[in-house]
Structure formats: structure tokens, C-alpha cells
Amino acid sequence: MQAEAIQSAELFIGGSFRPSSGADTFDTIDPATEQPLANLPEATSADLDDAVAAAVEAQREWRAAPWQRRARTLLAMAEALESHAEEFARLDVSDSGNPIVAMRNDVTGGLAELRFYAGLASEVKGSTQPASADSVTFTERTPYGVVGRLVPYNHPFKSAVGKIAAPLVAGNAVILKPSEFASLSALEMARVCKDILPAGLLSVLTGQGTGVGAELVSHPTVPRISFTGSVPTGRAVLRAAAEHIKHVTVELGGKNPFLLFPDADVRKAAQAAVKGMNLARSSGQSCQSTSRIYVHTDIREAFIDALLEVVASLRLGDPHDEATDLGPLSYQRHYERVLDYIERGRAEGATLLTGGGRPAEFDRGFYVAPTVFSDVTDDMTVAREEIFGPVMSVLEWTDPADLIARANASQYGLTANVWSANASQALRTARAIEAGYVFVNSPGKRPLGAPFGGWKASGLGKGSTIEELISYTREKAVTIEIGD
Image (cartoon, rainbow, N blue to C red; front, side, top):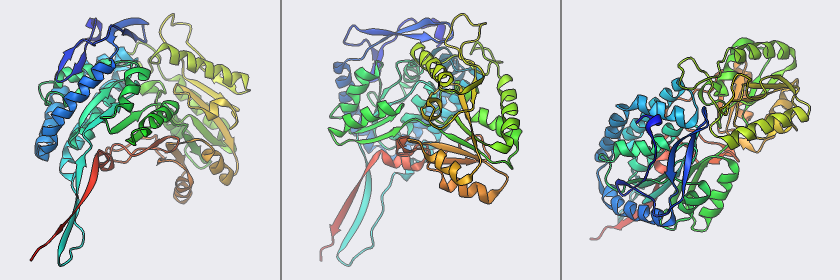
């Protein structure tokens, strides 16, 4: 499906596409042109009830299916989706504004997650307890039933495909609620896979997070919820789910520190800081972005020079152009929010070294040039709050113990990057950092299967690992008395 040809869409419920039971719709906007791409339906409470009923029915058979069948089904999905890989990449470019090269990588990554979890299908198993003379005790893993998955806009296809893999393999049905700012690839995924998955096992409902998204979280027949997004919305999800004592995992924001010691290679560190920001993947719209850069005073000037040189080499432009590194931000309200953060940085006394807004050569589109502030202090807004855009803050340090305290003085604890030529120093620092994932002398590339998830306000639960698969099941213990 070519994004330019999309005029309207329907909800995917019970194995087929159908209109919403309500009349409300919303437009999804191309962030590069600010023109509508598609008119999408607002799913209603009745639509959600239909999706849940279909999911309950489909899941009865699916949970009883042998793990080999579930694995084969996910592998078949991966094959079918891969045959449309370029179409999905271009669809995400138009819908999210991310550049084409990055979206091709996202498609590859999403398909890899499908295959990864298909390979783990046999690991949904229990254990036995030490035997006694007159009884046997064992445990088994049982799927929850219906899982609600709410995914973000920054990596539309990768999130939609990758985030349904574990619950499906574990034996659940899934109701997927994509971001209202990037829903198209989730709908197209359903279209490609509708004859592969049992009818009702997957539904895709479009609409506002405050509408059908909130209703999905609070629906009494959906006992398992997984959400990826902002901290404020994550708190709202947890509050709503608490009413029914649901099992909830949340992958939330980050204000990730990049700690640069004076013995590090300044140029390599500068390249890694820019790559770690995910500027050339999602214009900094990444929970893993290395937006707080702590640089030792002795190398501050050399690092800033190298950082500005790397930033200047990035090309901002049409995301469909193969040569583009950064596209626009994904939607207007977020674009305005990022610009407001930049103005607050200036007003609070930070020095703007480069960037700062939409370049003059762009008369439309939600473009923000890569922005670097220096002379930033820990109390400034740009150093404390997640901006989720192409904005980096450079802070100075001199004392290692103070550095650790400052890096940890944040509500967030998702990732951190440590750069040092001294292995002992790097390891001690990595162990002292309060974060769920620490990279040492690395820009932040995560191998498939490594557990990803935050501490503190950055989240609950782990993803991309066998622990995520197991989290979509409940453990049941059984004791059998042995008669004479």
C-alpha cells in the first residue's frame, strides 16, 4: 500500500475490516507536508466490546494449540510481512516523518522480533518441585486471555509488529491500539496477516488515547495491559488498571545521561553521542536518547567542537530522500512543544550553539534542526525533563562522585552511556548508575534478546527478552496426591 493512495480506513475486528459503529473520525497528517494522509475512524466502546468478544472466542482455541503451531503462525506472519517490507517502510515515512533508511531498519527489526519470539515458543513452560513419597507438585504457565497493547508513534511498524509477538506466542489474543499519530502500518499489518491469524485473535482499533485507548485499559475482560509512551500517560494507565487489579507493564520516558571521562576518545564519543540521540533514526523522538551529556572540564572544548562537527554533517530534509538523515517531528503539537523547550533553555541561561528551530529553507513541515546547548546546569528544564526531540544539553563535571550523584538525580532511569578508556572506572560507574540498561563505550546498540526496561519512573517490566514472553502468562501450581 502506498501512503499517497490512502483515503480512508476501517477498524480491524474479528478477522475483517469494518466501519466504526460511531460517526467520529480523525485525520492522520504527513508531518513533512502538513497534508492529510488518511481519515481514520474513532473506535467506540461498542467496537471495543466487539473486539474483546472476538478475542475471547479466538483465544479459546489458540491457547490450546501446540507451541509448534503458534511458532509456525508467527513465522508465516514474518514471511508475509517481509514480502511487503518496502511498502511498510515508505508508509511509516509518510505517517511518522522518520527517514526512509531508518524505517527500512525498523521493518527489519520488527520482523526479527517476530522470529525471535517464534523461536522461544517452547519456553512457555513450568517446573517440578522436589518429589515426596505421596505427592507430585508442578507448575504450568497459562496465558492471560486478552492482552491490550498500546504502542507509540516514533517507530510505528516496529512497535506494532514487535509488541504483539510475545503475547501471541504465549497463547493470548491481542487488541492493538496504535498511536493516533501513526496508525497506518498497524492497519496494513492486519490486512497482510488477516488470513494467517485465526479470526479475532488480533484486532486493531484506531482512535484517541483518551478515548478507546483509555477504555481498553479499563475494560474488565482485558486482564493484561502493556503500554509504551510518556510518564504522565503511564501513570494514568496504572491508575485505571488498578481498578481491576490488572497486570501492567509500562515502557516510559528517559532523560539518559552520557558520561564522558577525560581519557575517552573525544571524536568517537561525539559520534556516539549523536548516534545515541537517535537523530538519524527518529529526530531524537526516542526514550533512549542520550540528551544529558556530562563532559569533564578538561575535554569540554574539544568535545563540543567535535560534537558540533558531527551535528553539522547531518542532513535535514525530505524523509523519502535516501540522503536524508533527519526528517520532521511526527505531529504539530509535539513540534510546538519541542520549540517551547528550546525557548525555555534560552530563557534559563543555556547557550545555544546550533539549531534552535525550523531552518529558513523549510516553509512547511514540522522540522527542527539538531540543537545543542552548552553551559547547562542540572536545575534547568532542558536538563530535567524529557524533550523527545533533537535537543542535546552539555553539562560540565570535575568530581567523579559528584558526577554519579548528578546523573542519578532524575526521576528517570532508563539507559546511560559511559565513555572511558579505563575498564575498571567504566565498570564501577556502570554499576553505580541507576538505570535499567548501561552501555559502555557504545552508542547504545542493543542486541536482540537483551532485557530492556527502565528503573524509577522509566517503567515497569522488561521487553525484548524471554522474561517478556513469560510475563504474558500466569503461573499455576498443581499438587497431586498419589494413592495406594
